[in-house]
Image 1 (cartoon, rainbow, N blue to C red):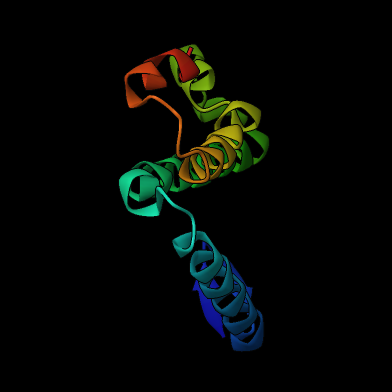
Image 2 (cartoon, rainbow, N blue to C red):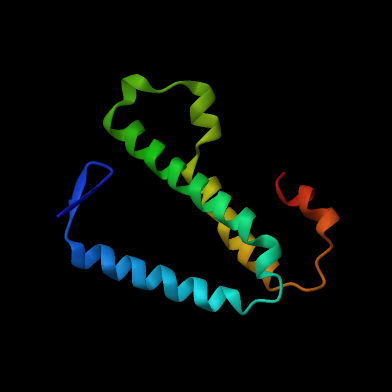
Length: 104
């Protein structure tokens, strides 16, 4: 067994996840702007996991919450960013100087 966020997962399930993740990355590498946007994608994936874990804590340890963090780690907001990054990787005509307007 492997522990992940305090939960036990069979090695088989984690291997499936790793294989799926590697498949997704292989497909993304074919996108024209993969190299340019991958660091942003990687950051957004980490933020998405942070937001999801914060939601888990909010449900299991509500006494530890505060309003500032609740506004930052809203999971439904964070999950969209990796999708935007993939769209940008596939958008050769996107003007990078317009990126800041996507984050609003």
